[in-house]
Amino acid sequence: SVLLYQKPNRDICQSGTSLKIQCVADSQVVSMFWYQQFQEQSLMLMATANEGSEATYESGFTKDKFPISRPNLTFSTLTVNNARPGDSSIYFCSSSGTGYAEQFFGPGTRLTVL
Amino acid sequence: GDSVTQTEGPVTVSESESLIINCTYSATSIAYPNLFWYVRYPGEGLQLLLKVITAGQKGSSRGFEATYNKETTSFHLQKASVQESDSAVYYCALGETGFASALTFGSGTKVIPCLP
Image (tube, rainbow over all chains, first blue to last red; front, side):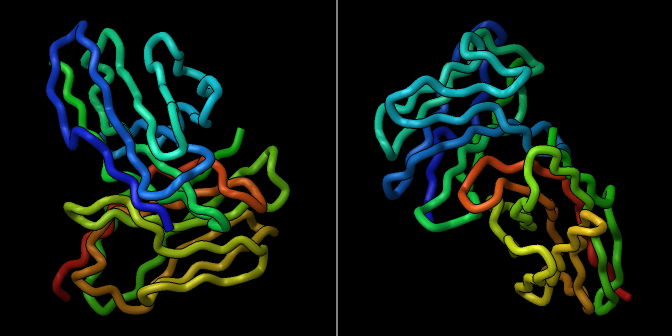
C-alpha cells in the first residue's frame, strides 16, 4: 500500500489569498490525483499529476485557479489561487502502489475561505 | 461520462439488523470497471473497505460483502448484522480496468446504527 500525508490538516484564509496544500507519499508513485469534496457530497476528481509533465485537469478545474506541481515521484502541491468562499471544501490527494487497483488517500485538508 | 449512484443517506438501522446500501454505476468508456467500497469512520480518513475487479465475483471485508453484477450494473453493499462500530459514511466508486486510475465516486451514504 501507499501512505499519503497532507499538510496542512486544515486552513482558514481570507478571500483573495492563495494557499498551498502539500501531499507526500511514503514511496515513489507514478500518478497522484487531487479531489475536492464539498460537505456531504461526492469526491470530485480535480486533476491528475505525473512527474515531469503538466497536470491534466478535469472539466471545471483550471491550472490558473488550481496549479499543481509534481517535482518528483513522492511529492505534489496543490495551490488554490484567489480563494473564494465557494472553494471551502476538503481537498484530498490519492495514489496507488505498484500492483494495486485501488487508490489510497491522504487524510484531507479542510479549507475554509472567509 | 462515468457515474455512480448510491442510496441517499442518512440510513438508520437497528443494531443486529441487516443493512443494504444500493449502488449502481454507468461506465460509458470502460467495459469492465473495477468496483470499490470505501468507508470513512468518524474522525478517520477514507479507507478501502472492499474491492472487486472481476464481474460476477464477490468481495467481503469486516462482515460486509458486495457482488459485482455486470448485467444490472450494480454493486450493492450488504451486512447481515450491523453493529455500533459500523457508524460511518460509505462510498461506492469505480475505476478503469486493469490498472490504477482515478476513481468516480458516489455521493456517500451515512449509516447510523441505533439501539433496537
